[in-house]
Amino acid sequence: MDWLIFGGIVVVLVLLGVLAQYKGWIDLSAKNSGKGRAMGGAGMMAVDEVFHPTAYEARLDQDRQTSMPAPAPVAGDGDRDVYKGNVKIEL
Image 1 (cartoon, rainbow, N blue to C red):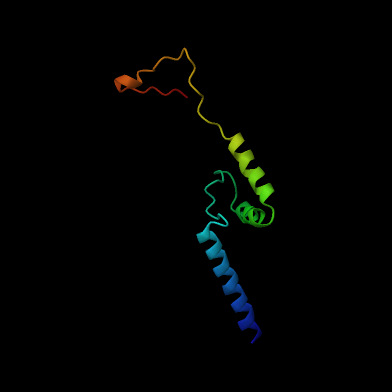
Image 2 (image 1 turned 30 degrees about the vertical axis):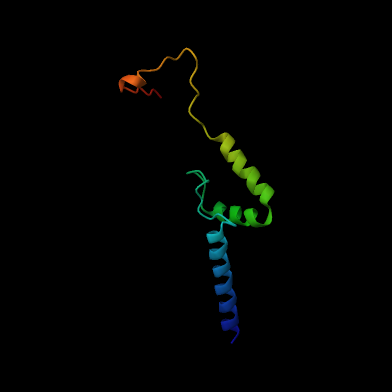
């Protein structure tokens, strides 16, 4: 009978997690994580999101700041033939 109670608690916790994901209370999709991050950290980010939201937001902000965006165009760059249909991208 004890396993039935334990199983019921597990089912209720899973259903609460699904409901929280559906309502947007937590985000377990890992769309904000980088490619190099291990999936083990995603579980801790979910715990931080629920129990320590300021640490979670700080980690997301740090990830946003460390990503390398494309450089902004400078006034002397010209149009780079964009209006002619040719786009030249140099890395």
